[in-house]
Length: 455
Image 1 (cartoon, rainbow, N blue to C red):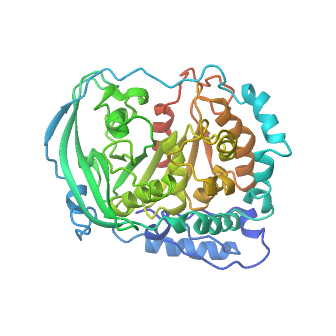
Image 2: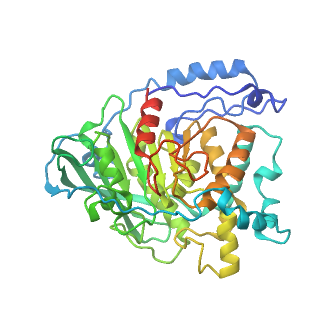
């Protein structure tokens, strides 16, 4: 497992003018080891870099030695079991979700600017309480602490980790036809359907269903996996993404295209959209979603030496949150196609009673009144996650407006340790590379990004 200290910038080291104390984190506590946090001089950074190198020499055992919860060793085993053979129908679907009317930041200014500038409007009321407004003169490390304090008190306090009870596995072999996606021959992908069982804070049993493709290709000496976070985008989004159903639907079988290239990949369905258990109505949908992520993290992801997370649309929304509390060693986060500002959803909630402009599965008035996506991104960067924000040509303009005018300026106020990608990174509605993508992953951009960060 690699040592992964992020050397602080001079600004981050010297901005406070006082010693802030030293926090040492490890992969089981904070994702990647970010050992320089809250230190006051370069000398301490050098010492802790050495400590990081020593600590991370500990060999990662994969699969784990202990079968706790019962079934985890079988779920992560590299031994192939053919199981049920599933013939994937080709070619991948060409359906896409496209906005060709207002697909640039400039095209929505005519109605976004007045909403932001209204002195009695939602934005002006909320912006006064934004952490980026209240704490403009602090370092990235200090700002991240402010976010953690507010998030833990208002959100994570309501999301205790469900108690894992057992893990069950079923075996599949996905057979992709020749010519499906950059493959000249038939490709057989060993895949497991994994069911993680737990008991939640209400004493209710719940489960989440995940698919683990290319489990046989995990290197036990340096076990790495791509973790795709799904949203509420179609029924059975994981099966759709792999091309098992609907030829990949609006995703164009994006997950199938990734696993065809030999990448070990885990994805799971959230509640109410697929094979995972439905919500009970006892808690806010956002809290249940975050608890589902904690189940995946504790059951499977913590056993890897490197996790590369990826999410689009509602999956991107969930990935923002996951960066706040993950225990697994998350190395990268590819955040695609979800930059619509929380204040806009809050505005719709107040003005239409949630009849439009609101994702009811994750809407939480407390979160939307107190946070921006910027806050969560900055915490991710502070936790040493390599972050890429990806925008595509024919996606809606409100998200691009927010990315250009709100998120990027606010993030850059504290750090420049991130990148912007996709085929429309400047949010002008014109593809920078001629791919003219809709609301979908830019798979070429992602593969290049993943290759760079895995060097």
